Image (cartoon, rainbow, N blue to C red; front, side):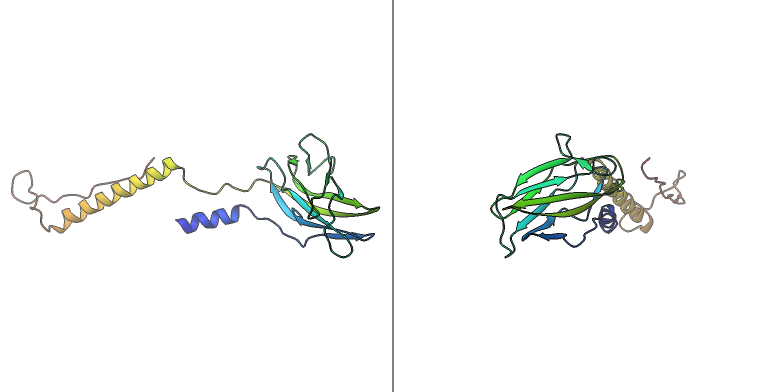
Length: 196
């Protein structure tokens, strides 16, 4: 049963990964480190966060670069927590900036997140693609109450099976007698049904 549950859970959500988009312009390099090529479920409230890294032409991180993310204004996509489609941040000492808290719209499809970084008079733009898909079927995991029922059903079934074996094997037990005391009484098998 665990194998079946694990298989269902593994099939419930699939993320589509793609190579990290990189843009280079004017000596500034912008790379999507996380959040590009991912699929969001309509069950989620927010889109996957997007993290970019800004580097100079020698590959060194650029701290305090201004990074702006622009979301589509309609259709599949999201909006930042305050309802805007535009958000700007400064990169940290490692040249990283993360955009999170993007609230998904209930529309299926792919959407671009256009990210522009600017520093020292140079700028570069990269696009991270995400998608919104219908909610995946919930994985089948029994609740605590269901697990208790299954355990109790297993214990009762095991006890019933043991009683049937003991009654039909005749080992160590007196043979039941019929109503007339003749020993002709044959016990029947109990009928059990599953929970309703």
